[in-house]
Image 1 (cartoon, rainbow over the protein chains, first blue to last red):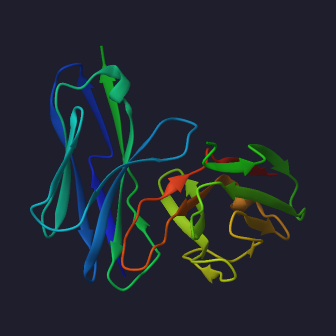
Image 2 (cartoon, rainbow over the protein chains, first blue to last red):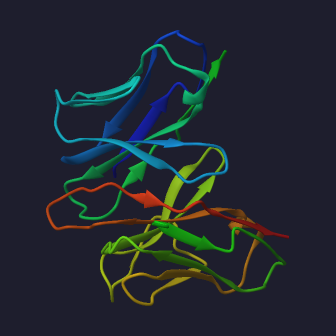
Image 3 (cartoon, each protein chain N blue to C red):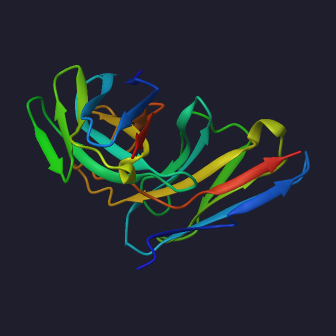
Length: 111
Length: 115
């Protein structure tokens, strides 16, 4: 059974204070690892897909990296508008269609 | 371009009542999904439809039924609502192309309370 564990559950940063969110996973053959952002009262919004260890993706102040056991979402010089819940999900090689989600990290960036 | 549209956005039911959540996507996606999101539990898959004409159970299908009406629409029905079904329900779609992962596109959610 695929498993995804995200840490920390909540993270509070000051504006400009860089940090990282962690996503540890257990799958039987990784087909893809996904990062989503979810604002309060909204549906998750896709950020990145990573396919293989060593891969990196960047978007504005966010950078996602992948190893064989975990993924990191690095946030550089965050702004208050980066405050959201960040979700990690995996798709295993045994599933053409099913994604397994972690419980998310609630990020708060104070001005 | 509306993306994924869910109706209703809010609903209050009494135990034992039935209702249907509607979902439509305008992105010509093959696969559609229903998830529920509860505090401390994350997103859990209820049912999915890999393509028009097919549906399959996810992690938590008990108490629900689905219909893939056509390529655009995927509905979720609660036949006899229970308080344990109080949750936020998300519909999602993806291209579902063979051999590819593909990201999910989510609707804004339907907030259901069962009294």
